[in-house]
Every structure is written in C-alpha cells, then in structure tokens.
Image (tube, rainbow, N blue to C red; front, side):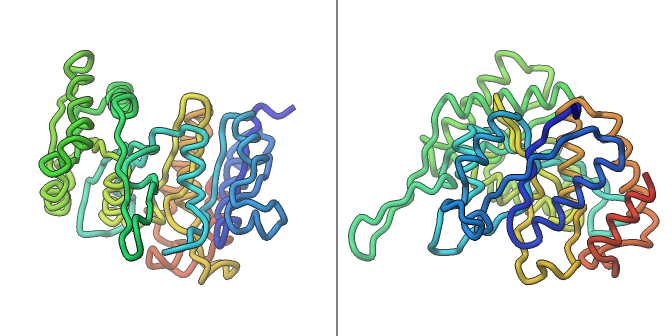
Length: 335
C-alpha cells in the first residue's frame, strides 16, 4: 500500500494541467502516494455531480485529511457561491497560510522579500453573507467571533515561533470598524501578551500598512489579517515577487488541510500548454512538509530554485517561452 493517500482536486480551466503536473513532480521526487481524484467547481457539474462542491469530495477530504487542489472558477456578480469559501467553511479550514519570498532569477522592483501572510479563513465580509433589504438596497454582513479571532492569532504566533520568525503585524481597520476589527486586534494582543512575548507584535491600519508594504516589504516578517484583507494583501504581496505564478497557499484546519495555488482558473489559456504550474508545485511542497515528507519537499524546492536561477526554462508569465509540460519536464530532469 502507498504510504500516503492524498485527494487530488484538478478543478477548472488550467487546474487539471497544473495539478497533474504537481502530482507528477512529487512522484518523480520519490513521494509514495495514492491519489484519489475528486471533482470541484464548474467541472463537477459538467460531470453530472449536480453540485460545484460534491458531498463525495468533502467526504474524501474528511477521510484522508489532506488534499491538493487546482483553481476553480467563481462567477462574478451572480451564479453559484464560491467553491473555495464553501470548502473552507464546511471543513473549518480556518487558517490560510501564504508564504511570499523573492525567487532566484525572478527580477522585480524588490529584493529580499520574505513574508508570510496568515489570513482568517472562515468569517468576516468575505464569507459572503448578503441580503437584499428592498429593491435597490442590499447589505453585506461582517461577522467576527472571539473564538475565530483568538484561534487565528494563536496559529500565527505558533507558526512564528516554530519557524523562527520574529514579528507578527496585524493589519486592521479598527478605527472605523471598532467592534469587528477591534475584536480582531484585541484577541491578537491578548494571545501575544499571555503566551508569546518572545515574538514582537504590532498593529497597523490597513491603508497605511498597504502603503508601507509597497514602500519597503523587507520591513515585514509575518502579517496577520482577517478574511477579506488577507486575500487582498496576499495577492499584493505576490506582486512584489513576480506574481501569483510563484506563490503557494495552504488552508489549514484541525482535522484537514487543503493546499492550492492562489491564482485563478484562467479559462482563456486552458488546454493550451501555457499555464505556469510552479505555484501548484510549491503548494505541493507545503503539503509535503505538512505530512512529514520534508526530504522530498526539499528536493523539489532545490530543483525549482535551480531552474529559476538558470533562467533557461521559464514560462511566459516569467518572461520565458516554456509551456506547462516543458517546465514540468525540466523540473523532473533536475530531480
């Protein structure tokens, strides 16, 4: 029997291309795993499941505890609710972890960026609780609970301590949203003062923080955000190091974890061998570390760092001409 059983969710658009590429790379690096492929997104409906997040997919993740997921399509201004939001809520994947670092050979306006964004993943405005009060009037509810605010703060400080990080900075708008964001930073400060005084903790109002982040991202170590801010800030951080094609992501809960590239499904280039699989591969590396396969993870990380540094086989988003399959083959050859 395989050492690990991992749920593989190809998703929509370029999802199948990048997800299968990541699985091939991990197997080539020595991972002993059985892949259980399950649907999600618009493709799940197309396959006759009747739902964008089938109960069978949720059951598989619950059973096997870990999944690697490709991007899924989310309609704008209508249609079905976000699959990602549903997945995080139903499996209580409360902590989004998005490491952002300068990559070898990828030239941007910034150098030596090394930030980890920790995002509360289950509540706030991003959870999509909206109502039409009357014709032409709608409301969107921002929910914050002491349990969730405390839980994500503990996760952030534990992450910092376990990885030798020195500072956690909360981004907030508590000067305006005094109850919701006020609760968020009060919980974070309480958690810090009670158990994590070895780590520096500070707070910045989100608009000023965004300006400082663009001015000099090297001033930041870890950023702690509520749900909506965390989504925006993590994508902004990705722009500092080369874009969403070089940034991985994880959604962590107490009983399951789903790892995914944070970019979209890019239907305009789906099936054209143009997608950069690196973000999904990097998310796979995070997954490998999570399940204890640290040696395999290190091998893959060394290989893609070498490829990027050489600059001979880069995908189009990174200034090269390589396709998805060519980049994947080059990475496997390095292994």
